[in-house]
Image (tube, rainbow, N blue to C red; front, side, top):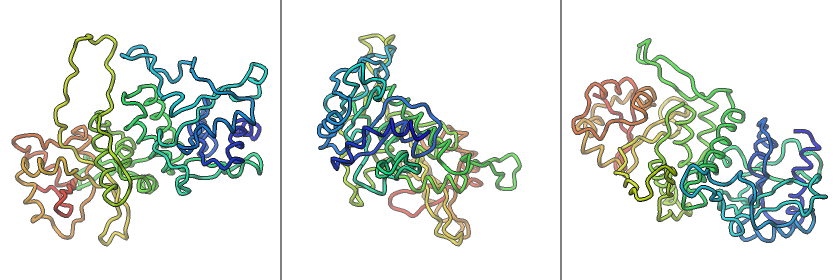
Length: 393
């Protein structure tokens, strides 16, 4: 992006700097300016301290050719007409989000077409946390040097969190798709390594290919919050993502674990509703999802053995699944006694991809062939009351 375009895009935020209002530039502007993603620029998104939303809008309107619009006539952020509730806006306009537009047609040529000011909590972001923000690597002028953008880990944390606990009680497909595009752009252009996994033969078998994250990708994932890591690892390895409800439960469980360590978190009492297609019968009862199949959650840690503290992916069972795993797998509790001390728990990718990220813990009779296959892959489970163990047949 050239300096003239940058100046035009960043000029409104100078008003926030002058008024001392904490904020970050978000969306495509952050992708392009701070993370050098070659993307087209659309609406500008600015996150501000929740208590400063109205003050931020007043500051920009007082110093620039903008005014507050109480309605959004453009369909960009409206729900698809092919789902029930089509036309619903992705944000709570005039409550948690304010839309600024040029005051008149004469000013439209020199002004941004649309600026969305959001409360930072909408995107699960903390604008006052300096470690979550970075400066412009190439500011177009000295007056723009102090404008802040989300760091790579904070951007990914925010996008995954917003896509998991959206600003509305109903999942919004347009917002969800946009967040997924932002995540994909960051993984493609901002994560070091130009490629996120490599395939190696393991166990002396030429046909056993186990995808592994490259060191640079592992380092990037290790900087993410615990609740973000599983989504990013699965995406980097090309694995199918969890169904929405299970993804929300996994994210909330990991977030709650961090809360036990002193991180403030109040989980939502409700599961976001995924709207039905307009072709669904109006009187059709929404199926009540059964208890999720026990799943393994991938995370990144540093090895505690003699490997020099290198990073690795390991798979753990969350507490909600551990009891089921121990009950339905006879070899689960016995595996710890047969674990060789020379063999450190590692990563099990190939089998999980083959099984569509599901290990069949729900089977009444464990599949011995699968358990034998896991021996070479060294699958790690972490029940809450034991040290990490490996499933060995």
